[in-house]
Length: 347
Image (cartoon, rainbow, N blue to C red; front, side, top):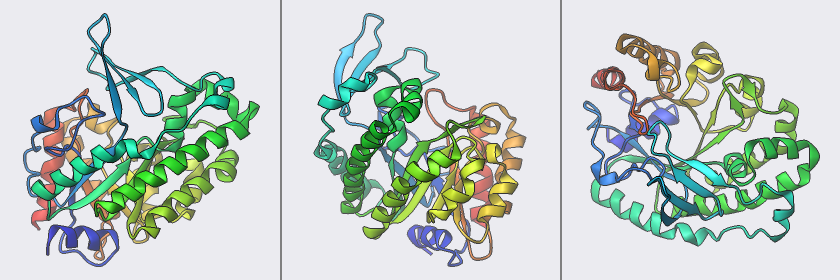
C-alpha cells in the first residue's frame, strides 16, 4: 500500500494496512511562522518513512528589518505589524492591529489573495522534488477568527461582539472570502486535503457564549468546509482549547477529519466517544501538557491511548509527530512519541 493510499484509507475508513503517520516538522517546508529556515529542518529520528505531511500558509510578509533590540520586524498582508521576539519561547507578537479602532474599518482594504502566489509556486516545486509520493495536507492558519483577533486585538474583538457584532461579522466575511481563495490555491497545486486552524477557547473554556458561536460563527465554517469539498478535497479542522460546550455543534458541521493537538482539554475518552468509527482523527500527544512537561514514558503511554481510542479495523486514526520550534519540545519526549507511532506502523 502506498503512503497516499494508506492515509486516504485511514481517513475514509477503508481499512488501511496500518495506522499512518503525519509529520509536522517537514524538511524543506516547515518555517515555524516564518522564523526558521526550512532548509535547516531535519527529520525527527524514526519518522523518515512518514506517510503524510503538513504544510501551512500563514501570511506573506514584508520584511521591515530589525528594531533597536535587534528583533526582526515584518508586516503581513492584513496590515498587522509582527515582532519576532528575542525570547525563543514564542514565534511572534502582533505589535500593530489595523482595526483596533472601530472607525478604521470604514477605510480598510482587504488584501488581494494573489500576494500568496509565490508561496504556492514554491511549495508546489518542493513537493514535486522531495515528496511526490506522500499525502499532503495544506493548512489555512490562522483561521478567520484568529485573523480577526490579530486585526482588532483580543479584548477589542470580544467587546465588539456585543457592542458592534455587525462589524465583527463584516470583518469575518472579508477574511472568509480571502481564505476561500487560499483554498482554491491549495486545490490548484493538487493537495488532497485542507485543514483550518482556529481558536474559540482557552484552557478554561469558550471565550464567548455557545449560542453566539452557533448562530454567527458556525455557518462560516460550514461554508469553508463546503468550499474545500467543492474543490474535491477532504476538509479538516483544528479548534484549539476546551471546546466541550460546542463539540456537538462542531461535529454537526461534518468535518471529514478532526485534528486534536490538546486531547487532554476535552478528554481523550470524550473525544473517542464522539469520533471513534464515525469521524477520522489526527492526533498528537498533548502539546500543552504531556509533550511539553511530561516524562518520555508518559508521552509513550498517551500515544498508545490515542491509537487505542481512535483506531478501528476500518481505520479512522493518524498519529502526528510534533517537535515544534520556539520553543522545541524536550527531545526525549519527541522521540518517545515518534517511536510509538513508528512501532504501530511496523505492525
